[in-house]
Length: 591
Image (tube, rainbow, N blue to C red; front, top):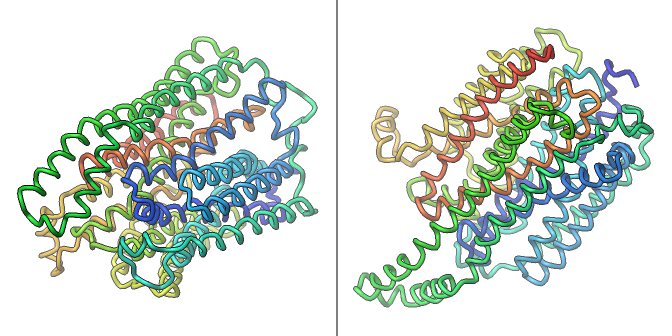
């Protein structure tokens, strides 16, 4: 295979799996608020859907790496990228079957287990597909090919929430009480269809003659070529991080079975049953006060333990960065600082992207932000995930051999077309879309950011990181303080500007995955496959940051919990500056 000429035939086959990753992941954003009311969960518990899904990515990638270290050979490169993707699809089909059984039995924990297996398959697929995309042409344009896959992925993220919402609610607006009485039959049918598609795509990959097996990209007969030699220090670090994470999460989960938690449930049920009878009486006030007195210390302990999980990941990676600088032996791909910095960047990027999408439903339910029912949030969720599609479509045009003029035209046109596509799908699903028209202003800002970034990964990442900080900071402004702006615009204060601001974070997340991925793997050579596995592990951020925001929301309120997003964007902007300096010292030119 010629490494400098893009293999478009193979590329067209690989990008099909990107759709399913997006469809399932974004569909969770609608499934989460549904499960919250269907199973009577708090905001943190509802975020366990994300925890199960994204923690599986970490466990899957870590298991692959551990097997590779033990055997002295990367299993993905031993099987080949093609066969690895097939195995991943079959595993996801098995997870879909487990989901179907659990949904039929109405068991929330079983459903989480099925979703965990689906995501384990996705982990193997992504570990294989991302470096495969980069290897199908010139390394310098690898981020654009990943963006192309990301554009297809984002089509899945746009359609996913609308399809899942229709499967759950049909075309009816439902109250929280109505949601609890729903049947899971439609969701079961949806996952039967998804499972069959997994099997169908696996067959397509297996029998495709256009798709190389992936072994020719690296010398598959050489242990050294797999970057597996003497990387025990990296494995030990990751295993220690895993053990500490389990130690941090266990007290949080066990606290829901504590005597205090059981007493809170009893009091809340009592309050719910007698709410109408108590009215504004002293008895109601006393009951609410008793609940607060029990809940506050319990919630404080939970957020401290979950925050410790975040500290464990950051501290573990920072320690690895320092130790590998002193002595690179035994660290494998982790001896490259751009990879460790990129691992933290992927962790934070996935965390913020998922956290915003997953907590958006709860924000929209608040009176200050529209007071929407769970069955009405799908167009907003679709627009958020569709915002990623708009950016990835624009970035993906650099994969193709076009004139500079056409590239400029499409850079401006594709995000607007993507915006129209999102609105069109929402309209076809019988959702009201007039409230979304003003979002075009943020789409234009994204387009200007693309022109300023000049298709340079580090520069574009920096610009979009700064824009992410700005828009989430705007979204954090209390709605009452936004009154002068609404009065100036002659509008009623419905909180829509803040909603737009949080939604637009999707626009600025859009290019981050391919930029971080290509910058992190730049200059790794024979360690690229191992480096890709490390980066996929850091999808772990989607398991930790969304529940952390959910727990913060339970304590401080949903709007103020989005401070988590602002802090994440700050690091991503810093990473863009930092990694460029690191690569420059190594003589690696990416911009």
